[in-house]
Image 1 (cartoon, one colour):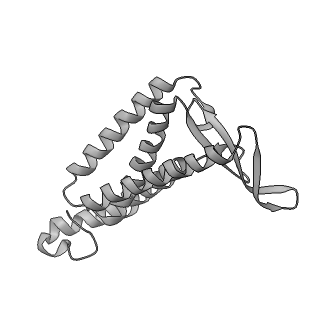
Image 2 (tube, one colour):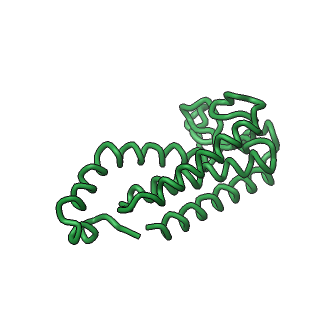
Length: 172
């Protein structure tokens, strides 16, 4: 599962970097490109925004502090993931999504001084990016994993360690 974690983390980070580069090359700041509309309502639109803050533009101008917090969080999550002896595939994917998205936004903060946001979807009144999607969905998946799967999965190893790895979870 460690290989899956690193491949998925790298792939998600690369997709994030690519989508941001495409957005920056094709959308002017302040321009709004409607992709999908229903009447006068844009369901999906692209609009370039250079975000020097965090979610919902909170902590605007605190780029260095946000970069430091993000870097520490990504290192801690990666270390924690690697210390888990028995890794379930759903958990692995969830961790990779959060770390890959976090690295994508960390890259922006460190090398650009802002995070490139460009996706706007109805009914949300904020602009986000692929990395944000990964972090949010990965975080939701981690909650689902730890609430509904983890205890049952780990019981398999406590009760019958020799049979547990062939029953749906995957070790390193």
